[in-house]
Structure formats: structure tokens, C-alpha cells
Image 1 (spheres, rainbow, N blue to C red):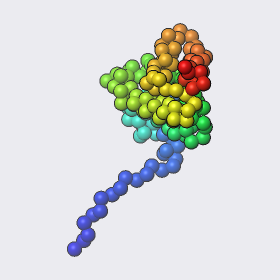
Image 2: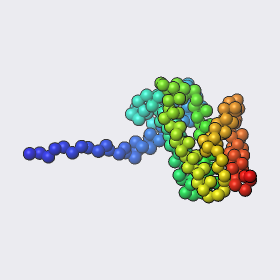
Image 3: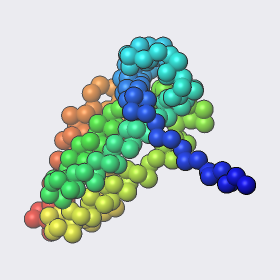
Image 4: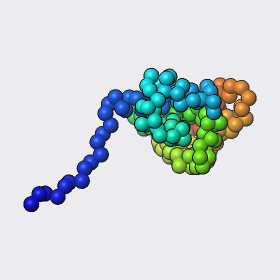
Amino acid sequence: MADAAQPSTPRKPRADAERNRARLVAAAKDVFAEKRSAASLDEIARVAGVGIGTLYRHFPTRDALIEAVYRSETDQLAGAATRLSLTLTPVEALREWLLLFVDYLDTKHGMAEVLNSVVGGAPALYAATGFRASDAVAMLAEKAAASGTIRLGLDPLDLLRAIAGVANLGTTGDWKPAGRRMVDILIAGLRAETAP
């Protein structure tokens, strides 16, 4: 009597397939930011250096590619919190991560038109990923407060709200320098030696 078939475990994607997927996501980020809704999937494949068939194997729809770009940016931002907390002092890690948040918002603003074209709208995508940024800033702010370098008399999410406020006010022109200045203002305001 033959043994019952063992359930198969999903195969790990080949290294070249993973590289192609990463190249497609990076190319899509750049092309969507530059061309917005006029960006074509053919152009994204060309910029990534792959054929259109490869793009469709990884991302069967335009929405799938847009979501992958947004999730990749969110994953990188969330992952940076742990990496920075292991390599920098707590207050430096918080500051550097907030600067990365400025870059993240800039990418999000550059892709706003494209994100709004996703079926179900951007709010559903934001809701599915937004907790990652709030969890990351909370972890970094709490570590900085525990180290005694800052006094945390506010919800860590308020730090993100302050930076997002600068981004939303700067819809005409380059808001990033003001966003970076806001990071330094926030860190200076939190420092324990300046607190009452």
C-alpha cells in the first residue's frame, strides 16, 4: 500500500525571480512618481530590464503592482526602526527614523494619484499598513524615553502627525526641507535637558 502523499510545502522563489520582482517594484516606484497615472506597465518593465511577461507573472494587475510598491515602502520604513535601534543611540535612532518617514511621505505624495486609482481606493491600503509606522515610532520613542534622553509627554503618533502636517501644507513645491527641519524641532523639544 502506497504511503499517503505528504502535503507539499511551497517552493521558495528562485533567486533570479526574487531579483526581478525587486527590480520591478523599484522601477515602478520611480516611474509612478515621475509619470503618475500616465505610467505604463510596458515602461515599468523596460526600466526594470525585464519583459512584460515577467511583470505579469509577478503582478497580474496594475493594482497588484501599485500595492506592492506601497507595501515595500512601508516594510522598509518599519524594518528600519529595528535596524536603527540596534546601531544608534535611542535618540539618534528616533531622529534618523523620522527623517526616513519624511522620505516615505514624499514617496507617498509622489504616488498619490496612482494610489488613488487602486480599486477600493488608497484609504483601504493605508488602513492595512498604517499601524506599522505607528508601532515603529512608538517603539523608538519609548526606547529614547527609557534611556533618559527625551521626555515623552505626548503620544508618539503625534510626531508623525506633525511631520505629515508639514507635508500636507507643502503640496505646492518641495516640502522636504521643512519636514526635515520639523524633525529636528521635535527632537529638540523632546530632549530631557530642555524639558521643564
